Length: 410
Ligand code: GLC
Image (tube, rainbow, N blue to C red; front, side):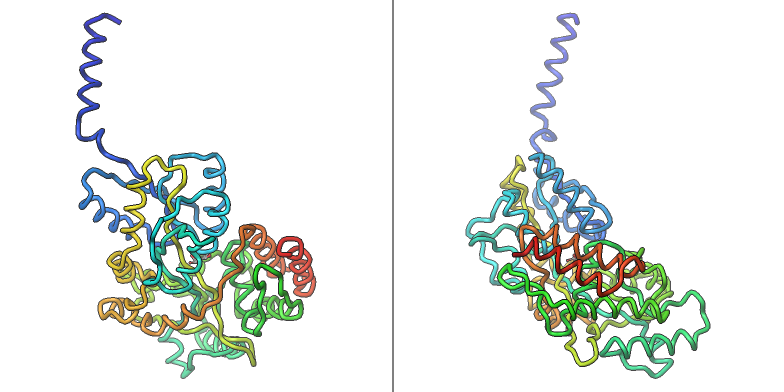
C-alpha cells in the first residue's frame, strides 16, 4: 500500500469515527415471533424517535416459546453480548436470574403492575425483568355459529363436546373442527395438561415441592384423548402448535379454540374470514370442577452481557410503560400489565372482552416457578404429546410424569 493510499484511508476512517452514525448505540432486541412483532416494531420506532442516538434492531426468535428458550440458552451460556434486551416467557425469569443472565433493575418498584407479573419478575429480592404483556388461555368461539344453533358458551368440557358436535353435524362442512387445542410437544402443551388438572382442584408444586395427584393427571390426559376419540378435535392434534390453532380458527375451520390473547387482534383483523364472528369466554371446567386457566405473559430482561446496559434498561423501561402497554393492547390485543388499562375505553373498544379478562388473569394459575423449569416442561409436554398421538395411555402418561417430576422437584 502506498503512503498516499494509507493516508487517505486514515482520513476516511477518522471521518467515519467522528460521523454521527458511529456515535449511535445499536441495541438488539430478541423478540418472539408469536407476540405481535410488527406492532412492537412500531413501539420501538417511537423510542428511536425520542432517542436519536439509539438504533434498535430486532432479532426474531423461533415459532414457539420452547424453541426460543433453547436458542437463548445457547447464546447466554456463551456469554454472547450481541443481544441487549430479551423478551422472556413468564416462566423464564427464575431460571435466567439463577443462571446470572439478567442484569437487575435496581430500585424499580413493581407495584403498579398486575401482581402475578410483579411476583414472576422478583427473584431473591431483585427485580430481574419488567412486564411486557399479560396473558392467559381463553376459550375462543364462533359466536355466529353458537347463535345459529341456540347454544350458550359451554362451562364444562362435556358441554363443549356436545355443543361442538351439534354445530359440526349441522354444518355438514368436513373441514370444520369442533375444537382446536395444542397437542404438539411445545411449551403450550404444559398448559394443555394443567387446564383440566387444575380444574380438579389440584396443585403441581408448592414451595418448590411436588404435590402431584396421579389420578387427577390421568383424568386430565384422558379428557383430551377422549375429545380426539369422539372426533371433537382432529386426529392429528398431536401436531398442532399455538399458531396452528390460531390460523385454523381464523380461516373459519374451528368452532371452539383454546388460545392466548394475541389471537384476538388477528382473528378480528381486516381481511380475516371470521372478523366480527368471534367471542371469547373463560375456559370450561371438568364436570364438578372449577374453571381455571394458565397464566401466560412475557417480560423484558436486559442481558447481563449487553455492552449497553444503560440504554438497554431505558428501552426495557419504555417498552414496559403504561403508554406502550396500552398501545400493544389496542393494536396487538396483548393483555395489559397495568390493571387500570383493562377498563380504558380505547382498549375496550379494540378488544371488548378485556373488560372481563382482568379477573381471569388475576386468578390464573402459574406454572411451577423453578430454575429447573425446562426439565419440568419437557416431561409434561412430551407426555401430553405421546398420549394424544396414541403412543402412551393416559394412566401410563400420568405415572411417567409423576416419576420423572419426582427427580426434578424434590
Ligand atoms: C403464550 C403465553 C406464554 C406461554 C406460551 C405457550 O405465549 O403468553 O406464557 O408459555 O403461550 O405456547
